[in-house]
Figure 1 (cartoon, rainbow, N blue to C red):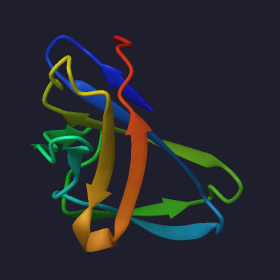
Figure 2 (figure 1 turned 180 degrees about the vertical axis):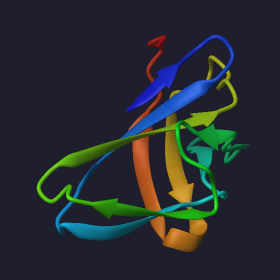
Figure 3 (figure 1 turned 30 degrees about the horizontal axis):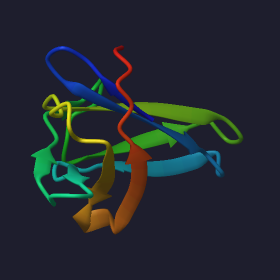
Figure 4 (figure 1 turned 45 degrees about the horizontal axis):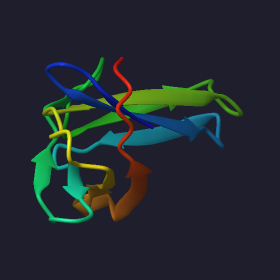
Length: 101
């Protein structure tokens, strides 16, 4: 999910934890890419976690972890973005709703 705030854009990600013991990598290079213009918006930070860091998840099997990744504010004309994280080979497409958090 993408939420627009006055001073930033939030991407909320939910990850289902499959194993009781699990490493989770917080990448420093996440970006939002405008699907029309290819303009890129680089991640500012991830709430409650340090970037470029592995997090040890213990005792969370079958539960969900929510990450909130913070980006610069998106211009109003941006309607769809792709969340990309190059080192992790992850990408997701989002409709950039005008919802404020």
